[in-house]
Amino acid sequence: MGDFASAAFSTGLILPALVLAALGWFVPRLLALFWPEGVKWLMLLALASTIVMAGVGAAFFALLYTSQGIGVDDLWETGGMALAAHFLRLSLISALMWGPLMVLSIAYIPRNWVKEVW
Image (cartoon, rainbow, N blue to C red; front, side):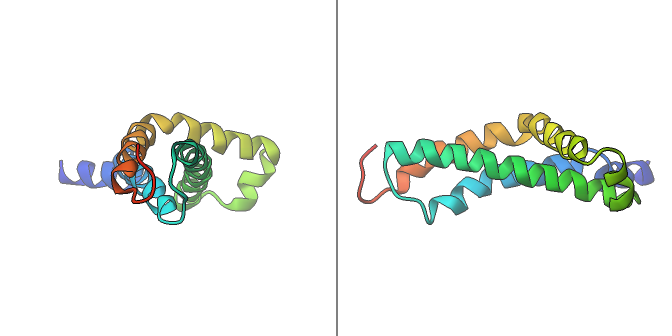
């Protein structure tokens, strides 16, 4: 039973879900450190966070593929741009994990505003 749990955590769905969920929380908070205050800017922060998370998610899945022993050359031979679309699709599906936490993180950001009022 311990081996199954260890395998599920390291190569299964648990570790990727936890990492993507944590990134969904921290990416908007990190971007907000350098982002102007205001409602319009908050909406742009949400868009930028979504784009960053889509790229991070695609890169994370590519890393998972290569950590499983699949070479980058083997992946590229399967279709070039189709490969990028595949990883982007996986990233968008993973938005079910990181999306809700990202929304909660963005909703919390106006509490720290100094110049603007929500």
